[in-house]
Image 1: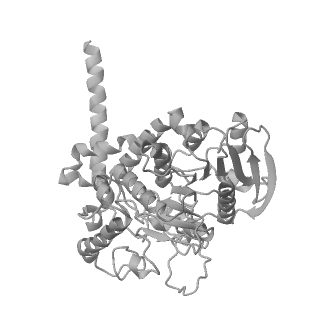
Image 2: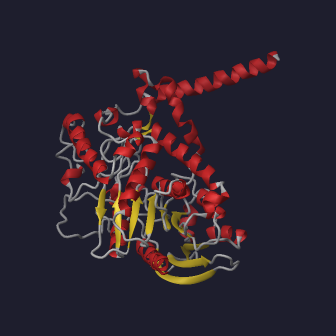
Image 3: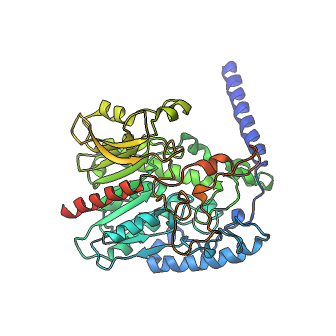
Length: 480
């Protein structure tokens, strides 16, 4: 018994030591600014849902903008060119052609349906702008809400709750319902955490007859499960309430240079997505709920450093009945030159799916035609089949690109902010900043933002294929 107590005491001392080392180490991060410390008074919370409609939610964003200016923007001084809170900066949102940090609705001249589009964690409605334009071109209203805690200052995420996000999804769907005629389809489109929110809503929409259930889901880099370390994200509360350890509340404190995405990351954000993912996974374990899910079309990279990519298959797709759902996987660049530089081998998605065939869903993989070049082909495994079919695509990997990334999926190469720098939109000037094309060089360990930040691919070189796939998907949806 005494030896067990010694072991337990030793384990406790080890864990406590690691915890305190991490707490002290957090003090080496950059200083917290007003954008990290702000707590917005006007921000929406889930307990206000019954008093809010779409217009009321947009009204609080106007109040948030005033708070942001008075409590954050006016505190930023200097001549920095890259500061989303400095009014003279090139990345100040209001200095751009449009400020996409607000909820918005885009409508076609003649409506065939409506899509509610849910952005990801630390993102803004801008991340789904290209997809919203695509849906509008296809005759769909696009209802694009800003999730609470997002869009204004990263300090908002310190206090946001996943239930706040879920409540805004319901507000957006109720508004979407007013835009269409009876019988017209509702599509939920979700990117990353937004995809998780879309699945969560679809699994629960039958709980209340006032909720409109979606006719289809389109998911981009779905965050069905996150890293297991996220379950530890809330442990900082043991000491972070002390001013000396206030930085321990943050996983990353970084310069806020991006006008439409936060670069800093509070641990609360990781804790909230972890809670939401666990609740969604429990709902996915209920066969009755899963049986009511509509057809799902997903796009994801074979390698994903943000979420557990395999979870989309393990928790979601494997639970589906054969209802026309499809999973599109962007494989890594398997050119022999690229493979030589990779670390651990990346599993071949085609082989993985063939081992599990026949499946209740279709799988489409974009992969190299062969290892001697960069040309890409489509490999398709239809639902219920055990043999894959190859088809020519006439696309190729861009020079220097070895894979897609979690954040690349929704963005066009010509995106003016995250693209490859090739955009030649009217009105473009030399002062236009393209974050997707910045590749600073110099000595390592000098910049606060590491090379990983700049070199991570921010656009999808196969976006046109993706857009065509979504268009075909909507055509099939309307025929059913």
